Image 1 (tube, rainbow, N blue to C red):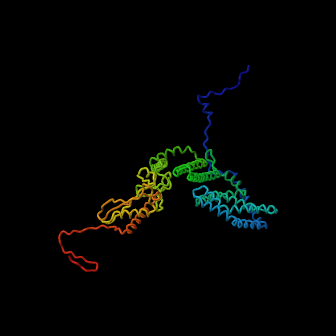
Image 2: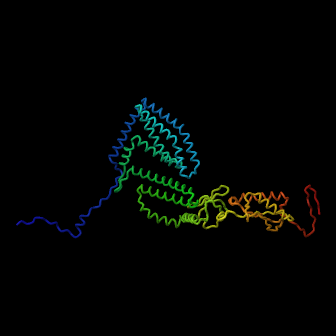
Image 3: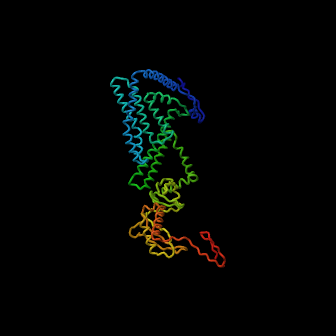
Length: 482
């Protein structure tokens, strides 16, 4: 009888089989200098394409068809400039009729800047159709028209951006990408950039990925700012909301859209948002220390807007003596414009902690007292008549029933009888305290002069207790002793 020759595995110590079966971890290698062979081949293909294109370009430029296409391009540019004058002036007029923060202002501004290129590109496409109908080459016309189309799109996108190097850089990059696509060089270039990169751990970072992430981040931030400004402008122009509430909602919408844009930008770059959990704690500590004032102004602004103790258009006076009209209530500060056209940014915290006089909170009308004096012995009725005539001569006087002007005798002074002209002011006068006071002083002086009423000046009587010789020099130079 045959015995089973199958051999069983040798017994292993406890836990040995699990140890042997466990995979050995492989440390990732970081190769910063490795460049794939495909990238070199793509770069070589790009160089070959450039050489072929250069040879074809030299041959094309020396042909007669090139001259005709060049003449067509020059004619399109000149004729397009002439045609675009009227629509360009129309768009500028519509733009100037709008506020600079309005979304329609941005649209008209962008359209006004592309009227000339639009007319040129239309004429170029017409010329290209005519050349092809005559069975003539139109390659240069196609390239110039396509590049002009790209320039129109770039100008529409960057027209409302602030002047500066960033705007120029974005315009050049966008126009360059469009030119590469039109010349059919974009695919070889992107392929080469995609194959050029470094490997870090399990991730591969290519030049194309870095450029794309950067462009997406810049684009998201720019679109977020434009959308925030547009939302804020639309809310401010709404007639269903009060100016204060529309300003608050506009600020919240703008901040919210900017936060969303920042989130999209960081995500496109590849930053893990979970890493900001620690940053949130740091921000909380910062609020307790360095950001305490900013956070206090933020909360104070929200309290002011919801409490409605100060609204846009109110005329206020601060504890420091500054007075002016409220123009804007923002999250951090409030814009106050004085009657001298001076803009003052007041931190919102000042309206909560200090005393503020709001002259137009409930009733914009207020009473004004203008002091003046006349000499002793002056008839009181004549003084009253002169004062009332002065009040009637000033345009700021309220003449409704119950608010008639009056003249009060308030004090027997050392050198004069002191009166007060008491008048109620109309709504517009509340916001011009300096001019109003000057107008009433002017009218009172005119009325007193009309009735020959003397405005006294301080007088003193000198009593000499011990007799002594006093020499008085007269105006004519003579001396008199007494």
